Amino acid sequence: MTEFSTTYSDFIPQIWSQKLEQMLGKNCVMMQCVNKNWEGDIQQQGDKVKIITPAEVSVSTLTSDDITYEALTPSAQTLEINQRKFFAFKIDDVAKAQANTDIMEAHLANAKKAIEEVQDSYLLALHTDVTSANTVGSESSPIELNKSTIYKYFVDLSLALKNSDAVYAGVKPWVVINPNIEAYLLQSPEFISAHNVADKTLREGSIGRIAGMDVLVSTNLTEVDDKYYVLAGTNDAITFASQLAKIESLRDKDSFSDLVRGLYLYGAKTVQPKALAKMIVSAEAV
Image 1: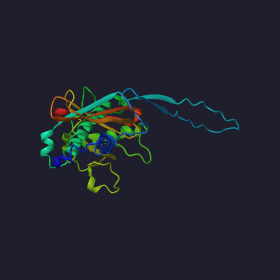
Image 2: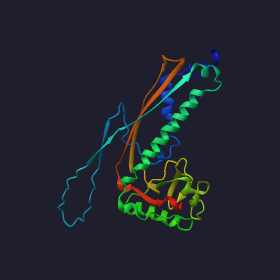
Image 3: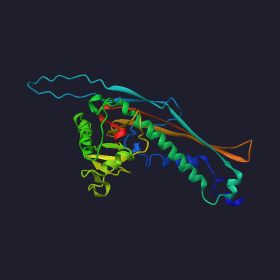
Image 4: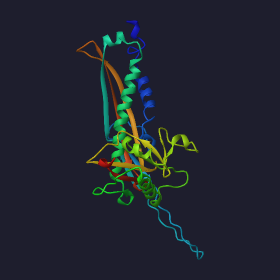
């Protein structure tokens, strides 16, 4: 029985919790596109984070010695940790005895992947927060992409962000597409692949840049009612907070097995809708 002492029997929940926490947030597409400015110690579902947004400051022309002071009223929003996901699996004693690799690490990697898929889908669904002014295409007339027109529409998407003052010095916008749209984009001569981006400041996992936006690909941007909602923005738009609340193991009283389970809490808030834009694309034409 010593063969599996380096796999399951040495499972220490605190250590594996730290390991999985470190793994999360890396390589996940939408984790490259949000900020965690308000992430604190989240202990349970229902925790709330109060977000204070500073008020706009106006500038006036000085015509005399009299200066009028305006009263600034910051706005407040609430980020609620209202998403709760878990994973739970059983480890049979026979599998322990026969394991010749660190199977626990492989299982945690699969748990990480499953959590990231949930995260991506959840965050991409925030396209509903995009204003009509920042929307390219419409529900009734979605864009029909092809390799000849794709650049034009991505320029329109980038322009929407610039016209809403979401893009400023030091801020680089992003856009998330799926593999079907990627196939068209790769045929566009205006697309700059990651290998040819000179400044080397692409987000992790980006395939390149189009119309000034870092391009990321997610298989979780799926078809909805024969349409794709391509999301673009800056990291100012969405704030995200999460906590791997617990990983624990216990002995199964009904079989010769160990049980491992984990609880993951998270929430997101679109704090600056003007910093998001979307393109509604016909899935039939892609």
